[in-house]
Structure formats: C-alpha cells, structure tokens
Length: 235
Image (tube, rainbow, N blue to C red):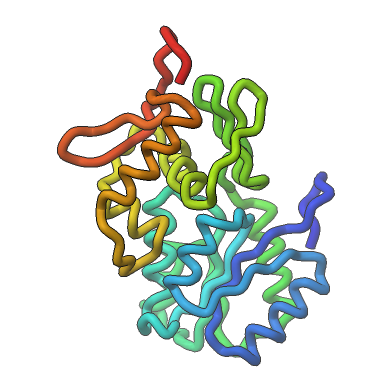
C-alpha cells in the first residue's frame, strides 16, 4: 500500500485491543506495503498520534478505556486539528453506531470483516484523504512533522521529544490559545500528573532555542503561536 507518486509507505495508525486480531491485521497491512503503528488503548493512541505522523487510521470502537473510546479518540483528534481519514472497526453494527462513526470519522467496517476489504477501504481513504501539512513555516522557523525536524534559517535545531511536541502543537494550530492543562493532557497524555509549571519550563527552553516570539503568552490562559511572525525581528 504505497502512496501514489511517492517512494514512502502509507503510514497507518491502528488501534485495536485484541492481540490476535491486531497481529493478523498488522501482518496483512504490512504485507500490502504499509507502515503500521499499533496502539491498544485510547490513551496510548493519543500519544502515538502526536509522536508518529500517519496518513490514515483504523480504530476499534470498544477499547479498554471505554465502550465508545474509539469514537472519543477520533473526536479529540479532530478537535486538535488532525484531518487524516479514520475508519472504524466494530462489532457494533446498529444504525446509530454507524451514524456516529461517520460523524467523527470517514468509514465504518463491521466485524467480522474480510482482510482484503479492509486493505481496499484504507487504500481508498488514503487516496482521497486530507493530511496535516508536511511542512509548517513560521518566520525563519520550519517544522517538518514527518521527519520530526525543526530548522531555523535552514539549520537544524536540536529539541528534546517534549520540546518538539509542544512546539508542533502550537505551530500546527496558529492563533489558537492552549491552556497549560490542555498542553499537559495532549503532550503528556490523559490523566498526566505533572505540575502545571512543567509547561512553562518547556516553553522557556523552546524560546531559548528559537526566539521569544515563536511562542506567545496569553495572559490568563496559556500559550499560542501567533498567526503571523513579527516582521520587525527574528522569531
């Protein structure tokens, strides 16, 4: 399952808590030419989505996090700005479930399903899917999500994993203010138990490497990346 006109493999985020089914599906998808990143829970999938770029996703609806965790994960990703196509896999085949799935996702395949059909549907979704931008630019700062790379004036800047993830969250949602608790939840995971000032610490280190203006403080709220850089100076 290679992307048309590109050398790389299609990247699939696959969320399924049944180990036997997950192993079988992963084997088939990888045999078709895809790269598969597997997660067993909503929380794990949320962290993977921010860490590993993907082109299309397949989510089980019922996960250890709850009977509708797949739907909830998809809604959270949409709210965060992810636009990659999402296919739901579920033994729940009632019309209300299908309607809800198509409301937050793009396709719905009841279990049990034919593996060939799963591959075909994911390929079709990839071909018509909208993905996050491969390059995000802000002034002289360039973010390349697929490579997890940050450049400034064309030179690579070394960031820690968490510094990168905080920066990516802000730059991929320009103008949107995130509270410290939102940043903690999105970067450190649902139910993360960290002091709120950990976000301030990471913002300070990002500014020290990329300039103060790349992350703007929103008083009483948190932080955001300005929609446009200050043209009077370096970000």
